[in-house]
Image (cartoon, rainbow, N blue to C red; front, side, top):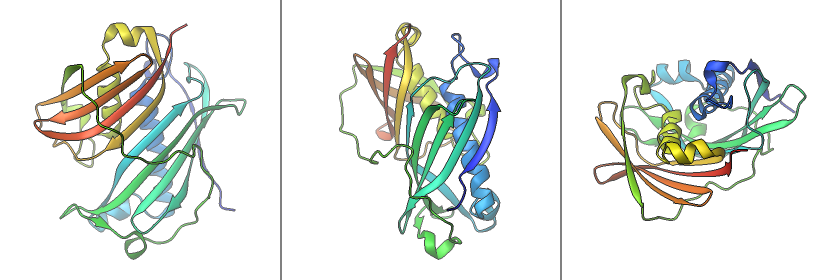
Length: 243
């Protein structure tokens, strides 16, 4: 059985919100960071992809927070490739505390694209093979979410610092746009328990404004990330009351 990839972190104060809980941006970026490093180890990371004019594009990121990581907690970030077919690869994650308890479980789905025409590529035709660990951190389907009617809209700016080295809006920024769009009062009264992102279309880095359509129903909020008539992502968040 191949090994899962593991990195350890101590959660710093600047990575946390006013209550000492990990910020959604940090959590998403930490997951992405261990995925990127492991992809390099497997020979399908950014170095190889740049040489061959290819890139990984995420279609779904599903994150379930069993216990919110807190300031000064030593975390083990664990990731592994859990499934794939001709064009889709699945990568799963766990975040565990210093005593081994499960704090976060997550799963994600990716496609490989040609950077010139932005079209999907077959994995087996373009990448070396790697061992799959057929174990799911969160055995949840990657689904198309039903449409909804927003009850309000929130406008966000695309900042220069939102653009990553691949010249597109960093995936974690979508989580920030969604969680911020519920408003200060709701956010201050609730703690994030689950975030499910379905990415549909890239947003250009020079886009001046992004509109987030929001509908909140109790402890569930739904979000459409929109520019003009184009829907770029759907996000669903599940919350719990702050203690």
